[in-house]
Amino acid sequence: MKLQKYILISLVATLTHWTLPSMAFELWPEITASEKFEDKATQSVLEKLFGAGVRKFSNPAHEEITNRQFGCADNGNDADCVGSNNEWPLSPRVIAGVRWNDNPPFLYAGDYGGCPKNLTERVQFGKTSKCWTTLFLDAKARAAGGFFFGPGYNLMARSHFGDLQFFHSMATRDMERAFETKQKIFMWAEYTWKLASREISPTTPLMEIPINGFRIHFKNGFDSKRLFALGQPVLHSQLDHVALGSLLHMLQDAFSKAHVERLPPTGEACPNHPQVTAPGKIKQFNTYAGQDSHAHSDMDTLEVMRSSLSTSANAVSSGKALIQMFVNGPVPWDTVKGLFDCFYTLSDENARSGPGSIPKR
Image (cartoon, rainbow, N blue to C red; front, side, top):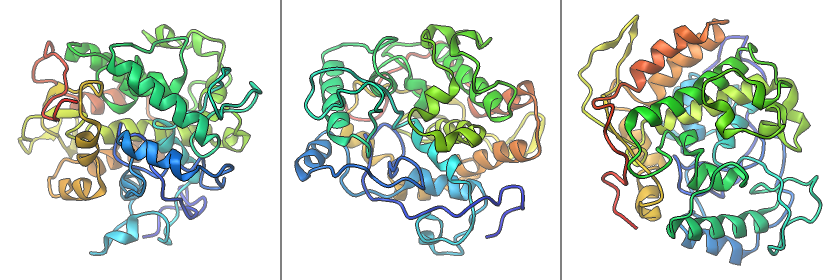
């Protein structure tokens, strides 16, 4: 399906078939659509990941959801919207942003096998896979023992097992109240939206961004370029698209039962957005630490995502509404916030987080 000319940027390049931790809808974690894997992960590394709940071969659910959000119509053939062979256009920087939540680049200095000794080289799956895998498995084991990763630790550990789990529309800890999780999700939504709409400069230090709670999580001297595009200057010119991709990823995860438990939808429209059907109210935000990783992964597959599209309010329809605001912009955050209030309406503000219906580890 052809998109409007203001979205027409470039075709999505062929992707690779390896997946990331089962923290979100499955995806293919190539660094960008134009960058090839720079290292060859050994079979033993991939087997370690698979044993930890990371599938060796997977369906690119996040890519397909994004493609559908931008207007890809499958005409009865699901393969048309996978992203590797379709002929409809989408900015590869949006896809890079969608992948970023699961695979953010970071610097690391340590003695772990396979980790770079040069602090200027980023750690990222597909770039330094052996180091990334070692650090991920170490973080997973420590989190299982009750350790919590906050500021001062790497982005991968924090986003999967610590204070940045709101990247995936999840609570950061067991027993976190729903309104607290929602505040963190909205903090990230406001930041990424303002970066995407260029209200926030990509060179503004993160510590100086005037969003409530933001500085608690980002206390270093990084700016948005360093955060989203460490070692990847190819992304700098379209960091607005990268930020939009990150926001879309978080919203997509809000429709995964492994991340969020909802009441059935009523069929009502979102307030002030009559063209958008409201999803069911959120009953509980889940936490990953107490879940069985394989059971979590089973809820994030491409097949589960496709089956969810039969409901009127789903990850695709909600994302389309957000994208429409982006292409019609600039739209102020206060207007976008009204739409997010609809997507993240709570049934009980004080509901405590936990593993939800996913079996415990």
